[in-house]
Length: 276
Ligand code: C2E
Ligand code: CA
Ligand code: CA
Ligand code: CA
Image (cartoon, rainbow, N blue to C red):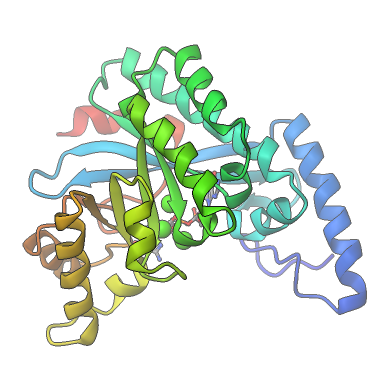
């Protein structure tokens, strides 16, 4: 294996012949990482746009690799998904995020919520609904403090079953967020079919929102659409003051991005409660 910089170890950039070996190595390393508890969650704050208050956090997985350092999800999740290991990893993420939120709430952050990303394979599991509800019960969390973020494409393989699973969870109070909205395969009909509570406008649209640019018009339209479907709108990847003002002005409900708060290790989160 070759290391391309500390934080982005690429398991894929090798000759075709190497590729299977690389993937096999990565898979066994991932199994070991699960056993040795090498995964951890970073938490990126989500802010109420009108008030600036922190309303909760998105849990983002990291791999604290014993030799390679802190690895970001793009370097190992695709492989975990391809070989089904994402189920075990995803279950760990759900459990850990709920455990952590319950702890923060017990320490006084009673208004915080947590968002967990779900992979396509997790969404395809019939056990998903029971697993999520069991986890909430285990940590005695009210269902509405958990948001499940799914992408437009993750439900595409079995749209009806996915939608019905999500509808069961939503009926219990769990929030469903459509992540990366605008980049995927989905059309508007599909959006209507999913029992969503929130829509996250993809960073790609947010990056280029200079006055008069085409993205500006698209974003305004997406926000209008979300409103008419009674969905909360989140702008993710907000990096500049101009972007923040733009999205707040358009009536976005929630802002997330490096300008306001980067993903943080769990131990750096609690001080934020006292900050405001
Ligand atoms: P995502 O769900 O769209 O998460 C947002 C990504 O954008 C995160 O990258 C976050 O650190 C980054 N980000 C946040 N604000 C900004 C900003 O202002 N500017 C820029 N340039 N980037 C920003 P991260 O943590 O590397 O995660 C990448 C992707 O990996 C996530 O994209 C998500 O699809 C996936 N992922 C992360 N954790 C999990 C997990 O526990 N389970 C699953 N299934 N997927 C996960
Ligand atoms: Ca997400
Ligand atoms: Ca996203
Ligand atoms: Ca993404």
